[in-house]
Length: 340
Image (tube, rainbow, N blue to C red; front, side, top):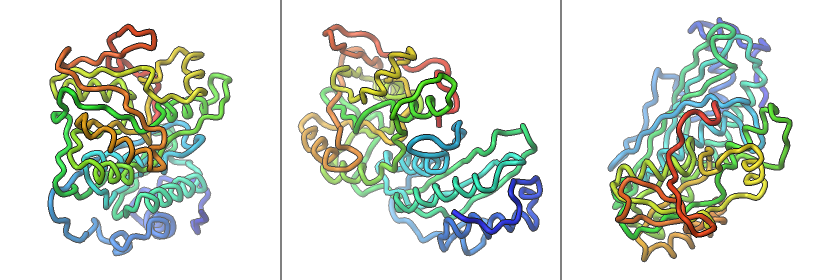
């Protein structure tokens, strides 16, 4: 994306609220995002009324490096919040975007990030309607951090929440796990390893709508981001008060990702994803949910990976390929810092 700003690098003046702040908004952000609400130039966005229940979420993105195979901090910032709103059972509509920029950050890199955000918003069908920019001195941040918040309308007749999981429910995963975390890790070039692994960053709202259309009584949806599948499953088990059993052999993992994790000593079930979700549905609806997921481009590798049980309340067990079972705990510590 080309920009018409005369400076090549971010200056502290770009965060002053004066002429250069106005310039970066009018010549970079506004043309890229271009929503009528943003172009109106208010201090906030005036949006059409939303009837019914509203879902609202916010997230902050600090990934390093900014650009990696399959994505960047730009589409990650849009997709991450779109997905958080979507798995509440809602249609995402509007986003805000807040930037913390480091003095000296190249404008061409910011323009690329903004271009990726605009493309991701267009793909997801959402509008970026308001935002903010702050500039900090060199070494007070690392290039750029982005916060996004999102609002969506909850689909009628849908009540999705972790507490709704019930014994007997089937647990489905939309595709291969750990792609994002491993792609970012290898992009850092600290390990001297290379592999054809790309981040899975993608907007899941279309997939969510397909699932809800097929199975109105979806009990739980969760995008499996930081902490991976293991942390998401443990959070749900603790909230609903029942046990969860996952089948290791059924969990989709790309061979290259599995190989990299084995070599590096990482458990792929603890690694972040940015374009995958789990769905928990009544057992008699599992086939319909699976069919709907596999018919969507982002769910072609979907699989039934486990079930909710009355036994072992609040605990997640992993049935190994060998047939035994082991406790699958929530991730402790920071395994991969700045992964999203």
